[in-house]
Amino acid sequence: MHKKLIILFTLPLLCAISVFAEMRSLNDVFPDLPPDIQGSAFTGTGYINSSNRKNGFVYIGAGQSGYTGIDPQIVNTILGKNPSHLIESLLVIPGKPDTNLLNAYNALSNIRGLKGILYHSDTRKRNIPLFEDATRIVSDKKTTAIPDPNPARSIPAAETIYIRLKDTNFGNTYYRAEISLFQNGLLYRLSNFRNISFLFFPIIKEEKLNAQLYIEPIQEGILIYGFAGADVSDFIASMVDMGSSVSKRLAVIISWIADGIITGK
Image 1 (cartoon, rainbow, N blue to C red):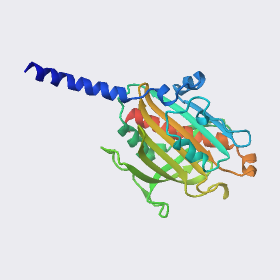
Image 2: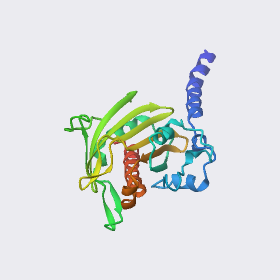
Image 3: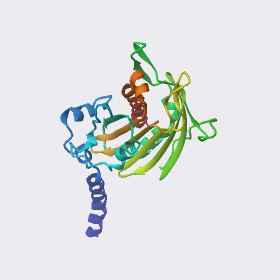
């Protein structure tokens, strides 16, 4: 009888220890991360950096900081598309490490939540909504708006979502988002399936803006790592600060995910 009681009481403890032991720390994911980047990751906006092919790409995954904790596929997929500009971001939402991935999945599914998120416009000298409207659409062939689903109770192994965002600078923009279980978390792939234009002039051609966002619960909270690339001509790059432009959009998307995880919406 006593042996049975001991087993009953110790099993939950052993399970808890096992789960905690499997959860990684930030240092497990990014060994030897420079202190300034690590500090920035825990701020409200996180760490974000842009670089370009002309001046040389700079990113955590270049190998100089022991990049071993995330599958290199996240970085290599973007590099393989031969971008002219790279944007890398890292945010840790501090908190209890028991936040589950279902919150993150439901945050990614709430496309309407992208509408109205503010960013600072350098030209207008004030905060304005980056996306004036945001909606899920049927497909890349049929752009009829459809509602977001109710919060899910489980995460599908893989899912593709089509999105229309009314960008304050570029008008209607169209994206394909792919969500999948990956490594210890979720991988969110985003790419434009139509040209992104300004006054009918293509700024970024279709499939030339790509982002990989990786989300994982870690001991310190929730990690969101982003790696994005855009391929634009030198002529466009001379007129538009592509690093800043893509950085702001990536920052808004990460803010949307983080808010959804925190609020559970």
